Amino acid sequence: MVRTHASLASGPDGRRAWHAGGAARDGEGTLVHARAAGVAGPDGHAAAGHHTVVGADGTITRQGGVVAQGANGGTVRGGRSVQRHPDGSLQAGYAVSMQGAAGGSISRSGSRTRSADGERMASRQTQASGARGSYAGSTTRADGTLDHDSTITGANGNTYQGQTRFTRGEGLSHTGTCTDAQGRTFECK
Image: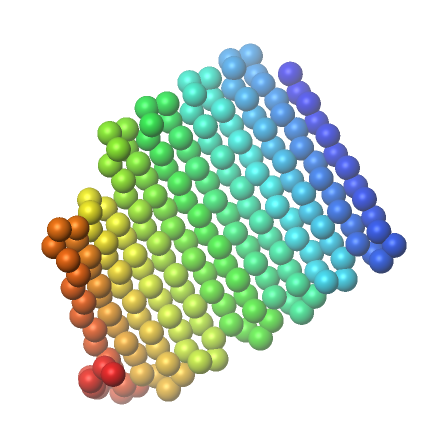
């Protein structure tokens, strides 16, 4: 069984929008569904879509993404995926990046898992840069403990590196180090 649909619309100011999708089921019971849509005009353009598969065993897999660009040249791109299994386990991930017209950028990605017995783990990474400096951070969480590491670099080359840990039942700990552009350590304020 296959079903599809599509549409396209245009406006007097040059704007255009479209949408398309479809679904299919094979002889073994697997169901596939896909959909995409987009818009374009004087202010820029954007498009997004997703793809879902429901397996005969009950496993569900979903993937999606988006891309957009403004009239000034700034862009955004992103994607994510999720897979759920009949035993309750799950794997998921995402990534997104943004580029500014003036050159600054930021990106973020992450993942999380859940086992069949309920154990959870997650991680996230972030990076950003611009005229004033850069930032890089990483966070992980598992078994009641959260760790966060970060590095911040200023336009003058000074750098801060920090590590923070929180453990349920034990509390919070933090350390940080500051260095100048020549690698000399100084007191963080």
